Length: 140
Image (cartoon, rainbow, N blue to C red):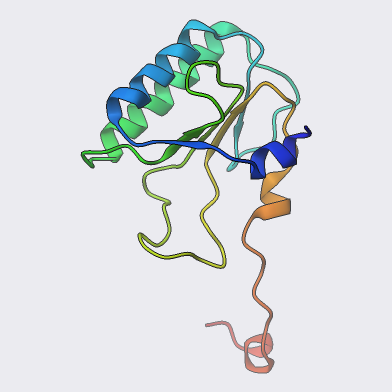
């Protein structure tokens, strides 16, 4: 399965903080051969060394704990809770609409994978809205 197919595939939503911390601990204990793709930055060309991966994972965990003050997690998704190979983590401040679906669902900020990433932002990110006659000449 290629990266884009895996990105669009089925994921398990991590609803409880206890499960989120267990997943992060699993990742922490198995830090080898991971790509960490922050979708706000340039796509990585290589895996992270173990120390850098653990440091980045701790940084992400700190952001989640500090900025997602809900009783539940609900912003972390994985392909497998005990043997993950792909994890999507949404930034707490970029969750889009809280109910219903959207034409442009939010993009996960962090993608952790065993496969080399492909540009999901280009492929699945929000598309530029078509410009109307007036907006061509005036900036609103």
